[in-house]
Length: 90
Image (tube, rainbow, N blue to C red):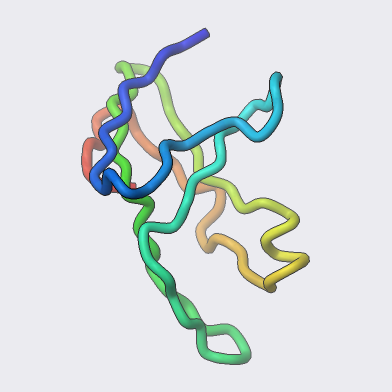
């Protein structure tokens, strides 16, 4: 298993976690609330974390089907590619 260093930029937020054993991806949390305008509003929502992926490794941010089904929210520009050299907040 690949271990990726995570920097928690907001200590009040829980670290990303796998919902179930064997899951392929960890769940991210929003660092702050966002109010979306009806009919397709958009917001840039920070996660409160930064990663240090090793060279040659990429990360991806993808929407969850339940988020879209229950709340009508999805991620634009998916999958969101995280390059190994990116060190800022996701």
